Image (tube, rainbow, N blue to C red):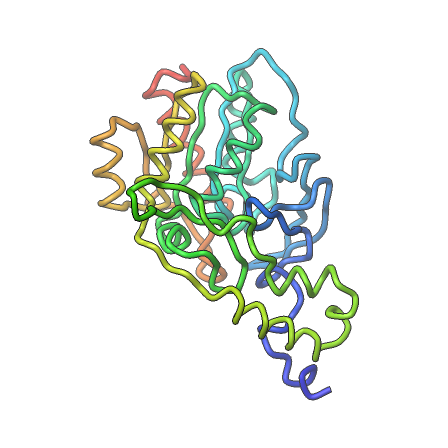
Length: 292
């Protein structure tokens, strides 16, 4: 009773502020939205969310003869605080009817998880263009750790003593939240939640590795181009180190500096901000000859 009254953040249900339980544990990626799940989401505003049969907040995938442009990213692509119809991907879908647009954004993902997800879903879409949306505010931090600040475990890229690179932390440990939702005893007994939380934090402490961001971007580019597709990057706002890398690697990119954002809950783009992002992406696609 005391634990319930105190209401410790570490013992609460959910997937962060305002999240309904629409994600499930994934041993390779850490978490993934539940296919065909739907609900209401309350962040800076209340929106409706629905995921398709692949767990993406998008329309159902369909084979098409039109060129396919696939976007990977985190909550900025997924559409935190906006209805699906207000996102830049849906705006582009309406403005570019000759292009198949795919939104493969997932809340909370780092570049490492986006790379692994892209490989998993590649055969479902076989895109002609992949656009990585890099969240300058937190992607570097996400890429250097095995867990997020709210306790969700994830895979991470690390360099071994012999100099080789590989993914570590797989299978990904279950977060305490997955026990809260999947195990009836832990869900209903807060003493059990306390025990599970204590055990998980002792068994799987937070790990930090040197920042592998540029390596991850290069790996994603190599994978995309090895499959005959084009690779582009969009930046939430300027990142001098990453921009220098993109220029040396001749990777075309654009920046979304100035996009209107909410001032709480992660500073995600407003509907007005998504309009600017759509304009910048369309300009990038035009500059690179993908659309006329």
